[in-house]
Image 1 (tube, one colour):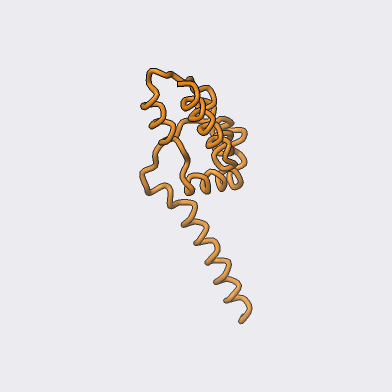
Image 2 (spheres, helix red, strand yellow):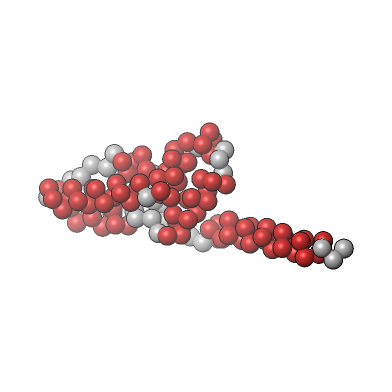
Length: 113
């Protein structure tokens, strides 16, 4: 009996912590970043350089978004079949591919406009 209570408390604590971490994003207002497929096909327009720089800077994922995208990729593998574009976007955010594309577009704006 003595071993059961601490084990139950530690397992219960881990489960509650995971539940809180996975649902905290549901209660806050989240911005909707551009999907990676759309970001990858973004066209640079030199006439709107300032607007595009501001837009691309706003599309940078925050650390929390990177974390939740990685957790979503790992703990929701069925999204690979159900929502392949969303899964790829989450994977691109968590691995830094989307930020790399944003940096390339900003360098193209800087060098060519």
